Length: 498
Image (tube, rainbow, N blue to C red):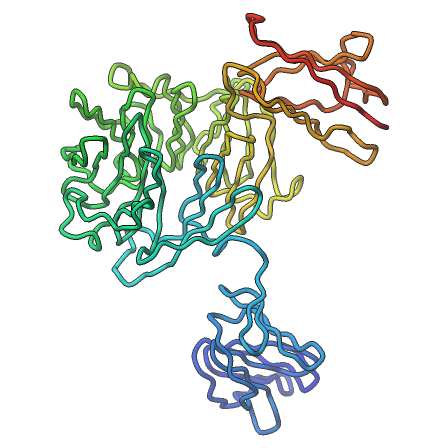
């Protein structure tokens, strides 16, 4: 670090100064966790509790602070400002000025539920030793971030809904029922709630499934008859994720051995792994709105035709695109389907979107052609209400408003946005609230066809071009939407101003 008084370096707790092409140890005694910072031609050192300033006599205490880890320091008009690892922007009195956002950009899981996005910051179950504590979780709802806390309940790891009630999972604290504000003590196979690591929660039809990490009965179900625990999963107990098919078949993952399928009604269990065509260690399992299954592994993705009939046919299919196996031997960190049954892939080369049949590459987003802060995509979650996809990278979380949503059988609250389209607008026109997979014909005011669109689930997008891919001119355009059988229709209009 170069300042007016010289060039300095910190190695461990030793401060050195460059003198005549050699480094000299200044023999200053600094506490652990100290870092050096230049500001206003002076050299400062900061630990989590003290700021020091370099003088002729050495580093002298400038002021006491309360921080977690100081990442930067700056003096502005004589006032000290600190960039703190967890508390945000701090003044010298410890007052935090943090922008609205999640607790941290380090997430253990992101999940969408009822139109809101939950961000969890729990320790990993494999690393948990009882000492790690994290209060609260992050919630993104109605376009705003908030930090939510549950009294006496830490390391929140997941959430699910049963009977219109939210149930939260914890690494170490078990299950929390929000309506009663209590930590449940009747979870099977647990001596006490504080001994229970619940890694995942998923809602089925009138039931809630949870994974109790490392327990002798690692899977439990809550329904109207209460809790029921299960064992006998090929000797595996350390599951970190659970997904439920449309008929209630349970998909358990998180172990290096593969995926366990469980049908509680038969009951029957099977392990699917390399013998079924899974190419590597499973990183994510996604069941689409059509009950198809996509599995991401550290050696590429595979798919299964039907999540509910996996016991009848458990052969995995390798996706093929342009006569080549898609992402062959490439790590896929997460996988997500959207309202149009399209498939999103989280890779180390960016975020990819393909159509449902893997015949068309729709998007490839990287840090070079989008606001993504990194090409390392770690996790994905999809808000089917508005089509917003959230992508977690190793440098933060970002969302993209896709031209899709989970549709219904009828048109409902159809929204065209923006409307009108003003001269400065350069994006797509979004249409939401459509009947599922509807066809939309765009015409001019005289009824001449301008463009035909296909909904992805309950949404579609128009790039404001005509059938010749030329930009449309100023005018009023009509939207005629209908299902394939013509039973469901909608007529709207949009103004374009150039």
